[in-house]
Structure formats: C-alpha cells, structure tokens
Image 1 (cartoon, rainbow, N blue to C red):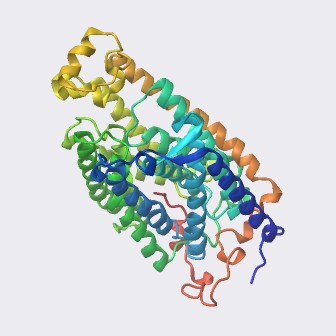
Image 2: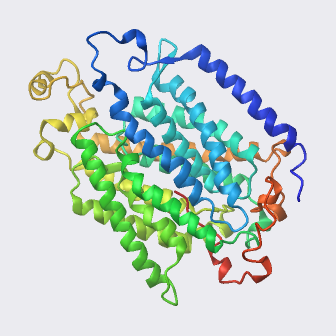
Image 3: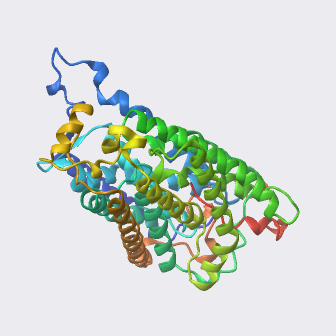
Length: 479
C-alpha cells in the first residue's frame, strides 16, 4: 500500500482542527437564529404553517441530494479513483457549506454585524458549494484532499464578494445562477487548472480511465442531478408563478438536452454507438442553458430549444475545444467543466439578456416589476403609487429600461469571468505549495495514495487490459 504524501498525516488533521475551531468560534460570535427559528419571536398569534421552513426546506432537501449524491456519484467515474471522486466531494462540500454561511453572511445577510441563520442561508450556501465542486472538477484526480479544502477556503470569499458586488450594486437578474454559479465556477476552475498545469499529463494518464461499474455509478449521479435540477433553478426565484415557470422551463430544457444528447452522440460517433460520457453529462446541459431566463416568460418552446442548444455546444466543445485548451492554452480541464458550465452558461446568459430586452407589461402585466425589480419605478415616482394599487407591497426599484438592464447583465458577465479567472490562477499558485501534499504524476487518479483500499479494488479490469478505445473517456464533464 502506498504511503500518504509526506506530512499529510499531520497537515490534514491540523488544517481540519484549526478550521473547525475558527468556524465554531465565528458561529458563536456572529451567528444566531432568524425570526422563523428563534423561539423569542413566537407568540400565541404565530401561525406555524407560515414558518419559512415549509417554503424553503423542499428546495434545500433537493439541493442536498444534488450536492452529496449527484455530484458524488458523478465524480466517481475513474476506474481507480472512485473513493477519491465521491468521498473528497463529501469532505469538500461539508466544509464549503459551513464556511459559505459565514462568508455570504458577512457580505450579504448580516444585520448589525449578526448573521441571522435560516434555511434560506443554507440554500445560498449550497449554491456556493455547487460552484466550488464544479471548480474542483477541473483538477479532479490531480489534487489531494488538503488542496481541495484550501481551494474551497479561498474560492468561497471571492464568490461571496462577487455576489455582493453584482447583486447589490450592478443589480443583475440571475435566478438560476448562470452567472454566479456556472460561469464563475467554470472560469475559477480553469484558472486553478492553468496554474496547476502538469506537462507530464498532457498526453493522458494510464490510470485516468473509466470502468464499467464506475460509469454506472456516474450515470446514477447524472440521474440524481437531472431529477432535482428544477429545484436548484427555482430555489431563489420569486415564490409563485416565477418559481412555477422555473420548474417547467428546467424540465423542458433537460428533456431537450437529453434527447439531443442521445441523437448527437450516435451521429458524432464514427461507429454510431452511444457514448456514456455524453449520457452522463450532455444530458444535463439543458439545466444550465435555461438558468438565466428560467423564471421569465420565454415560452415553453424556447426552453426546449435552449436545452437542445446547450447540449450541442457542450458536446462540440468536449470533442474539439477541450483538447485544444490542453495542448495550446495549458489548461487541463479534467472534467470538461468549460463545455457544460462555460459554453452552456454563455448560451444561458445570452438567452437571459434577450429575455430582458423583450420583457414588457403586455407580456407580464404588473408583475413585470416583481420579476424584474430593477425596472420598478424608484421611491417617490407617481407611477410606483399607481402600480402598488395593482401589486400591493411592490418595492421601489431603479427605474431602469430593459436596454439598460441588459447592458448591466453584459457587464456582470464580463466582470464575473474576469474576477473568477484571476482568482482561480492566484488560488492555483497557492495550491502548488509543497506543504499541501499534491500527488505526484505517477500516483494521480489512484485511491491507494489516500485511502485504505480492499485487495480487489483494481481487479475488475487489469490495467494491462485497458485498450486505446477504453481510454477515450479520459475527460468527463461535471454536474
């Protein structure tokens, strides 16, 4: 059995111990219950059914399944790295969520220096966790557990600060997280991968191969993600018809990308066979592609078309762009996150901008100013008083036109991609520190370096029996 990298026996427990002490101290100092969880706010007039738990918990539970089961199973596709893919996902996710509650709370949810904790905070933290796990996909199998924890430690504050800037100041519309989850995570992960470039792995690795049972487990991860993705896209949309549309559009987009994935996989394969890589990943592109416009009145047909378009760019990127990035740009995108989250995310952002430009009162009625709060008249505007007759409690907005809001969306996309890429490169240079115990090239994609493994862990397909056709699935997508 291979020994762990020098120092990992001490450094990993030390990091976890210090991190948990800091987290517990921070929670004790800055975190308390929100009004829906604090017993002091409950009176005889309190209606239990009105508690925010009942509105927010279903989405939270569904996203939990996506984070821990969907991602975990999906990342277990390497023949000799199933433990690493699934268990390091578990470790990283658990740490990221508790850390994101603090980081996001500091920038967005604190009141009087205190973070009011409710289920909605956990939902936002899991969005941040999804971004971190997507970024980790770019360096899957080439990093150790300590590196992944440090990646999460550094990425979460950058993401929280970026969220604060674009949501509170640029005031963009991003219900499904196309900009602040998919694009940010993609380009942060590519930046990390660029900094961690390994020339010795550019022509592949003998252990970076899929296995029959591993591919079945990965396909199960895809199914978990596929089934619960509507909850992910709808979780932060306005409750009511906006969330209703988000569920419908996500399902239609996923349906479109699934059918397209099977058709394109057979068409693009020389022998007309279906690739499990495409089934595991391109089928999910529809969920990304509808994200930016998921709560808008884009029409069911447009949602389906976006799913097909997202699948097409994802599969073409996987076949042609990923090898180019590795050979020409020093970016080894191990899980092809640029195809599913980058390219499909850009399709989604373009669709969202078009949806904003076409939004008007004729289509939305007075609810236009709830869905697009930035377009609502500002405080003191007579028009706001008129609208409040039709929409009681309507909050004042910024009075932006559709064109102005579309320009802010474009600015947010450019800013987020730039910040994420720079942040990822800087994080990657930190992860190169020898103290973080990176695996050597020859032991990448191998569970024996970090885990106690059973004697038969590599007996299903002896390494000598792996053919060039088997190794064609070296690079997978993630999420």
